[in-house]
Length: 334
Image (cartoon, rainbow, N blue to C red; front, side, top):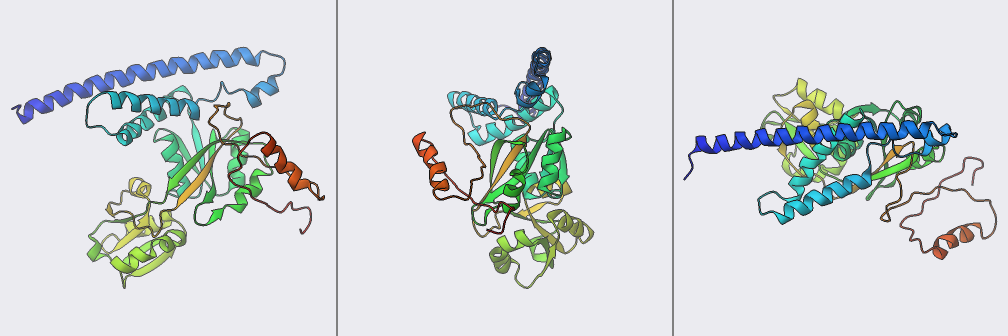
């Protein structure tokens, strides 16, 4: 039977080999980034430079289709080799490997709606990993402008929630921009109790209105009689908790625990298992993959049969519509 010291030496040997291989992979990623740069430089010499800037996907380092291929490949490799690693664990590991790879090829800045540890922040980190630069932005309009100007590589904006429905402000802002929907993110609700002390010592619970309302059944059952304080955001709630560590807690996502260093004491406080959906916004579209969803916005003349004729085109082309929303045009009352 191997001794503990011998086993730890084997771990050290494995770690050295893993780091060596990771560095080798990152060097190849840098070479890929340089090759893409040379390809883009050649295309920039063509006549219609403006068209290349707006529509060429070569400069896009983050490629959702390529990312899915990598995840599928490493999942298949893991399944073919006996071992304790689950598919979820392999994907989590490679999420960070991919994040580092993308950022090495091209420093990437992600703008997300809301303050630190907002649901959009959770979605952004879930999709892009920890290696990116993240910027909190206070409106969808500013995110779209940031992507358009190039100050942001990508934007992450809320679109809908399986319980609350569509985000009308997002739809209205998308109607007034030339920026593209590049990818989609779906995040299941997962809220935690964060505290420096045991649950029994908690006297005050901080949280945003939305999160407190989504976790009120758990709070009534497990922290009945405690003071519930509504805060402007999860960031605000965490800052208050840090000032009152001996007797307070926060309702928030796991990301808030990471960002503010407040330990998790309980998980899955949410009343319902809802899904929040977000769009990744870019200057260009992702090339077709034959496994795509498409987000389309259009307006119609106020005429008899106009909507019928517009929808008939989808039927004729065999396109399945999963959701239809209507928004005021702003040109008249109805």
